Structures are given as structure tokens and as C-alpha cells.
Length: 124
Image 1: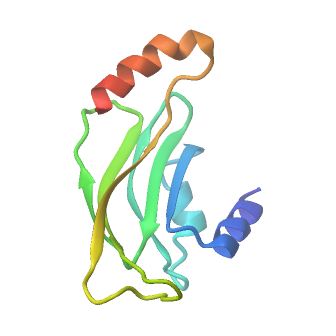
Image 2: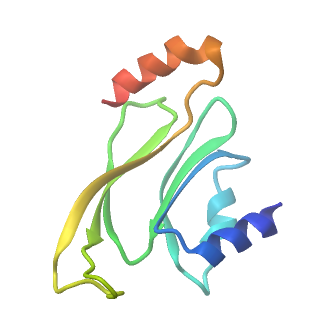
Image 3: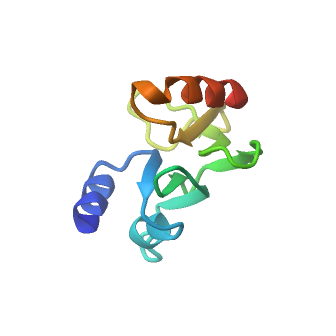
């Protein structure tokens, strides 16, 4: 499974990868932050009710982790995304958009609705 996940993510090359249910805190670094490819960096990893939550961004992006309350199953960051004109791949000068992103793993199913609402209010 790891090889297929890695292959698909590296094939599609997303700018942001928000992971839930990672089996260990080091899983995404081991599987996706390969030293020779060096495409992604982990913003942070926190435990959740099922494994770990991790947030990865392109290694060439400037980011700042957003401090959240301890114990929340969420990692957040403010990233600077280059603004691209049509057909451009590297950005126009020093134009950037600042965007907040997160990876969260909230309680599942109908019985988790109250807990999800509570956690979302804490994140806001």
C-alpha cells in the first residue's frame, strides 16, 4: 500500500498533502519526504483518535505553522503560494497569496457529530 500511495502522490504532484490515519508519526516523512526527491516537507504531525495527522507542503514554499490548542487532531499552517499567470510555472516576480491550510481528523459517524462541532469551534 505504501508504494502505491507514494507512486500516486508523486505522479500527481499535489502542492499540499493532508494525511489522516498515518500509522506512526514518522510514516509520511519516511514514505513521502524522500531525501533525493525532496519535494515535500512536513509542517507537523499530531496524534488523533486513529493514528496520526500530518500536513505536508511543497518544500519550496514558505510556511509558518499555526499554533493550535494542544490535543486537537489538527495541524495548520499559513503558506505563501506563488501567483501564476496563465501558462507560467514559476510565478510572477514576488507575487504571493497567503492561505491558511490544515489537516484535521475529526470524529467519524453520526455519533461523533457533537464532538466534531466542538472541535471545529476550537479550531475557528
